[in-house]
Image 1 (tube, rainbow, N blue to C red):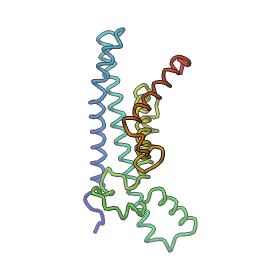
Image 2: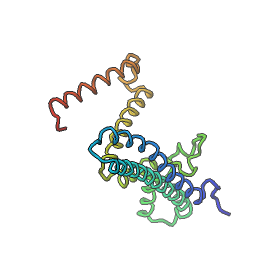
Image 3: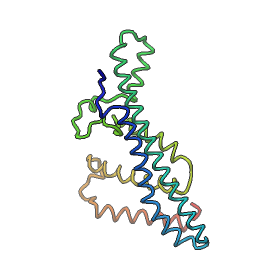
Image 4: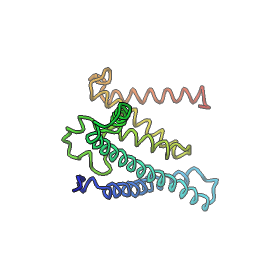
Length: 219
């Protein structure tokens, strides 16, 4: 009898991958087409109507295909890591007495990277970590995201660069929010509420960007 539940079957993982592929493409189409339509119509008046339409289609296709490819690759890597973790844990239980020192050390190292943590195994979250398309551990999300970022978004283009800049700002904001919620000073100080910190951030950003604009326009 197989120990895999229906939600952990290879077919379920494949469905999650295909769902990510379709969802990523649909989302990329939804957010890029109106943006490309407006920006090209307003700022590319040097182009003919045909060239404008080709530019809009090109930008939309690139964004949609990149998001679709990333989502599918991300979920594929998550599935591989999840299956590898289960296989290594099962193999460790069955062959722990037969393995040599180097083999045992190698297995421990791989399990440290791809295996679940103790907190994951005791987790009682509403969404089980073994569900298709869900990372079994935070390390899996980091590994899959890094590989997908290198493979899909690592090729320079105006769209890829724009998305990387946007995500960089999201990481900064998320890091500041994390610091405030976890009581890390000075971000947790009550005097630095949202209204005051937002105004300070706006002042710092615009002050620095205008200084660069006037003094170092090439950057």
